[in-house]
Image (cartoon, rainbow, N blue to C red; front, side, top):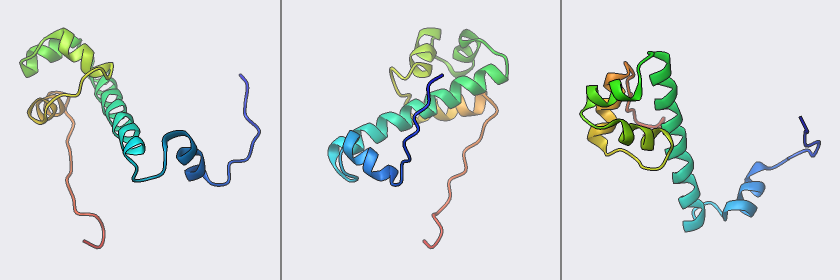
Length: 102
């Protein structure tokens, strides 16, 4: 495995160079894609931890195996209702809180 021995002192500069300045439409697009990928990976990992197949999960939440596959591969994002059904079916929970100081 190769490693990069460069010392990154300000990772924001790296992100700015690669994805645009924070707040820019280009940066926002990449951040949304990253969040969608992360959520898909969380769902995939949770499904594997509870040891159910894509077909079983699809049946539990009222969709198809191919749709679950597309979600897990980051090809599509589920709507809010399906997302909450997936969370529930996988034994997960979401806590919605106000940020500190709000």
